Image (cartoon, rainbow, N blue to C red):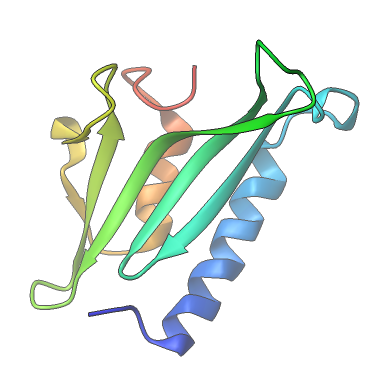
Length: 115
């Protein structure tokens, strides 16, 4: 089941705040930037990079994901390994609030999210 429209707006507010605090300087954003997408009950954070083969082409490289499980009232935290599959982030597998997920990603204690 998808996140409610009210919850989407609240998530967008927190995600915009996170992006604003973590974006690279303006002069490098054409080569590297960050963004997010809300898909059904998940929030995906990604890097936006210029393609090596065609610098005019932008690639989205997912780095972190949180999926809301309504029955448990928790967000499950995931990171994407080199196999391009989502794996549970074992140090903090679930959080109660989206803000906690963003704090985990921001701390990046085990360097699993942003490089």
